[in-house]
Length: 230
Length: 247
Image 1: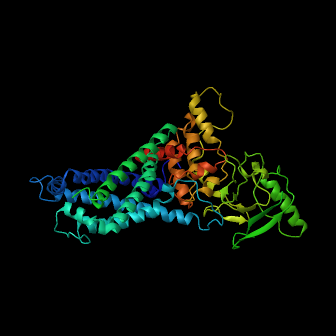
Image 2: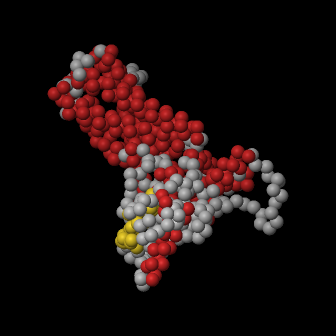
């Protein structure tokens, strides 16, 4: 017993899987902030927004060919998303197996709404991301089409007659907010946060970062639907 | 006071089990929850029925033997209280109270409300010890311990291993229990030699036994009769990460 047994199991332990989720989750939050800053450029005019979108495709040019830096970032994001979902699925399956017989009487658990909806919230976010990529990245389900300028896709996509798209975005972004409110704090704890004072700070930081994201992301579809941006 | 209890009855590990309703009449509000079950059992025995099996020992809230889900809450509605220290005055006349055993794959039901918590012993055996010469006790002041560390270690050491954390956890995780044991020994100078192997072996044993993983919801600490703080799980996570790096 003097040395660690079953060495290869290290990465499969519940805490190792949680560390994978924490690190990949923080990478994705970093992306969400960068993405939000890009979105907010629409308030400085369609040109500023489109210029930013084109710059993303030409980072590193001429040292790198067009879109290479963009694809490197995309690959990084895909790795983080897959790692996050795979680890979550393994842990969710273990949790289900750990309680084969359910309680007959189970009042609403005392954990926060955010904590209770992590798994289904995650599924909703995945479905939203698929729609979002088809809508504003590929333009397949966007009235402006795939060959249009990014700003045109945003402005045409959130017109008042497409109110159901705006509502879907609002719900999805609120789901992201709830997911991050518990997820960020949980990530800090997984990475070793362990003092009572740090717990208050960690929860507050998670709440503030989630709220800023929700407000930042909601401002764009709301502004377009209400006709504040054209 | 007159109440009704709906109790999980299961004749053995292979029985399917079901909730059975019993009337309990004229129970004193000053009776403990277990005494209420004693009264019910005496009536069942007089009627020639099988009494309800439940675990109990000291009935002083310090041994960790008793424990059941009362209306879906481990150890019932009173915070930081074991089932034996819960009194009927916290219920109302005419209440219907649901009583179920701890539910977790590593805690199989033996009979009625009794579950096998041997899984906890296996977690302890995997690392809940220190290297110390047996025989004569060493001089108490030979190893100085800073007072804050001693207090924190003592707080963690108050865990009585009742299993309420597992029963309450939506993931069926024993993380609070394991974290308390890891912290209790890891905070002391005597616990340092095995600090790394302890956290790795105890955590991996917990996983192997079929407990779920922690999602930091805090259900465990809210039902813990000893109020073991959730922070200790962060300490386990940190110790585990550092130990993995050294391996």
